[in-house]
Image 1: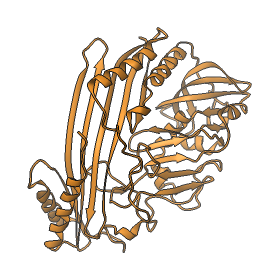
Image 2 (image 1 turned 60 degrees about the horizontal axis):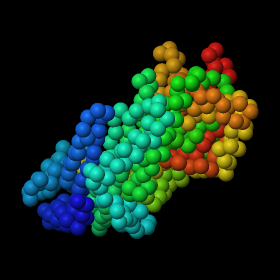
Image 3 (image 1 turned 60 degrees about the vertical axis):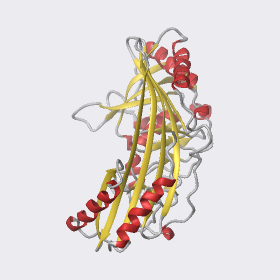
Image 4 (image 1 turned 90 degrees about the vertical axis):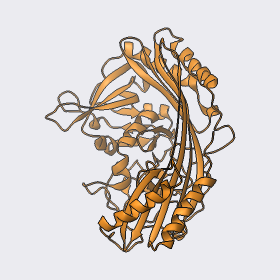
Length: 444
């Protein structure tokens, strides 16, 4: 069942050798083989098993510093050659790349060696419909135990992947990885929430904990009141990580407001941000980046000031990302996180005479079409005298997510990651001053 790397690196090498033989200035081949198995079930319906397998190649060709790109599903013996021919032909319509750095990297462009990043170990491919049903039943039992909620739909699956990259300048890398995931929607007829967990191997999935957590949130919603504005807030790790994930692009690469300039003020001094694709077993880790160079760590924000941007010229390679074989590599974040401090969550809560502990952040809502303010949809508890009290749920108005980060006054030690679209964002608990959350009249 597990995709293997040997045939992929052979296919990449063959395209590179062919391109070099016909006179291309540079050739790169990225090959990916993905195998997904999952079991899904809706309440009252029979479970269904689905399986998909995709094997494809992306090719970059360089001629006179013009770059052409094409991709192909490797469904036949001529598919890779056809992808090269299309990429080679695209060079004629492309403009020459600007700058002095070579378009394709060489091995010396990044330090380190390609390892396994903890992405593979015995048991990663252990998946069966029977085992999946057991995990889903485990989650349902925990979610429905209080008697207030039911599992409306759920899914358990495994994604197995092998990747190989080779280019004409000597870069050559291959690795394989696996990811198990469990997801469910839990509701009580009036409200709903989701339960989810991810892991490189099934032994770390806690279906019971995910189900119990969803049940707790459903029960709290029944008695929740709206969160107050103008008071300090502690974001628990999962909630803080969602905010970091929303700001992943400008935190890692800057933006039009100049946040990419070294030394520019990005956040409050309490915040330091790093990106690290080498964390063993993390969901966005990989031994090699999207160009085949050893993955690296980068310190992006130091005590609130920009240290570097992943897309800045001359900062080196090792941070290229691809969404798949159909995409060209671009600089981008992987495991992006706020570096932890030393405070425990109770120590942060002790700062709140009257405040809110936010345990979950949902989507962003426009607070007023005529105002630049946004409203975070949150779940959590009111905090009185440093102790969590009654539940709160609803919109929490803020000037912006940037204002939230600029008003962080203390950082916890409890770093957790929360996967999102294209980035695995992480954060410890964050203590944020009430100035970031105006009251109804726009005053703290």
